[in-house]
View (cartoon, rainbow, N blue to C red):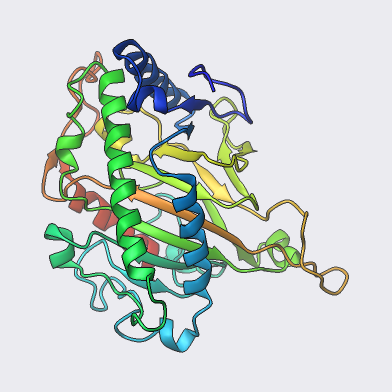
Length: 351
């Protein structure tokens, strides 16, 4: 596939192999295309990237297996994710989160408003994984099921974590080059691998409940961190806001072999709003393959996705990227990733 941006839905598609293994000229051209995509859409499909398709497929197989474990195993104290204020040590925790526990909101922090939003349950369950070494692992060890329940699960997930970490560093290099910076500018702020690797299962749910607003999958939101790498199954349901028509959402349909990458709020702030963090949501998927049910209560297909949230080293102070100050200077004061993400995560899980 040529490096040129091709129209699929409203998001660009870029052949990332021309950055990772191309000539210097191809690397520069591709880096500029990546930055242009993030300045306009905030999202991009990357194809021919460095995480092999067979590994992605295997990750989805493992994801299905872990969510098929009995709730009695997933909610054991050593497996379930501690919530902020209830044993969690940091804004990044590990382990299993049951359906309805996480409620996604956008820039909402008031207790009364958050409580009201929680009246509509997000029908999804999560499994969060982090680095197995370095500072993140010391602060927040992973919480895997006992090995005899899923032999090979832990080893695979740790390997996949590091493959995504390296992929993410290449994306940061492309962004830096596309902005005219030293290629390791962003890499140097992501040395601790303080990321969040998440398996998500959206169980089958009544279309009627989704349409009436009684239930939700994921409401419109932007991501917290620097960038997100997303692998999705072929079911569909992801939508991205059309930046040319705010409030209107277009499908980010599955493309086999691609990774969808988007800018998070932290990197938008860091770039002085030059790189765009775009609202997105997950709604009911297309009707193909619906589960049989009584007429008027059709059930959606279940859906699986694998996002990898890359986050800056928590104690490093972040201030405006050099050269992006604009005519009026930086819009935001310096902040650490820990300060920013703690605020956002607390609102997501607060009851």
